Image 1 (cartoon, one colour):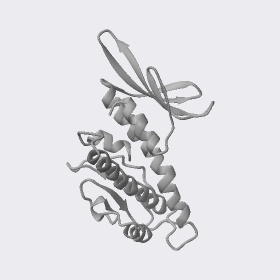
Image 2 (cartoon, one colour):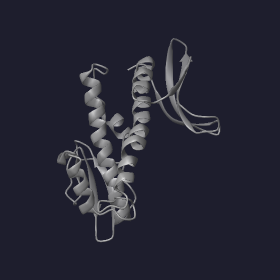
Image 3 (cartoon, rainbow, N blue to C red):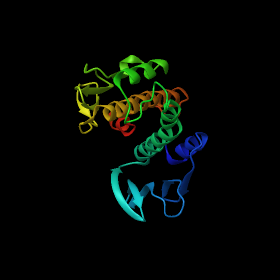
Length: 209
């Protein structure tokens, strides 16, 4: 998935990008923060660097040995923001002031489970009742607090949050379940259309979460 391809795919999904000779950036107005994938030309080779740019100061996030690797991460990170803005926030907005409101100040496990069921999110992608399972978003709670994390196929925890109030922990876990579901939807669509020939690895999966 080279830069030209991800530019095309992102544009198809309604995302604007700024493509330059040796870099690609998420669309931004003057003074706004953005992400940049930038090529560094070396003697006989090249490296790709991923930056977060704030007030024209670059924060280095990661480096990649080839264009394909860096481009995949740039694509996934941009689509992560896309889905949060165009899907997850819309769900929260729709559910506000209803019996299914899962905002950080009102969310409950029962509400989250009910909404996930109504959205037909596969049950194997989450465990919100202190029962850990692999390749899923897990939620640990007691009577007034909790935290969420992703468990990989080998049983290791990733992206573990701080312990928060229970409603906040539930709301965060709910969003992460949706993101994991959307990740697999995105991956399947790309693979079936031959836009990618290899599935995303664990590092790339965690970008979404």
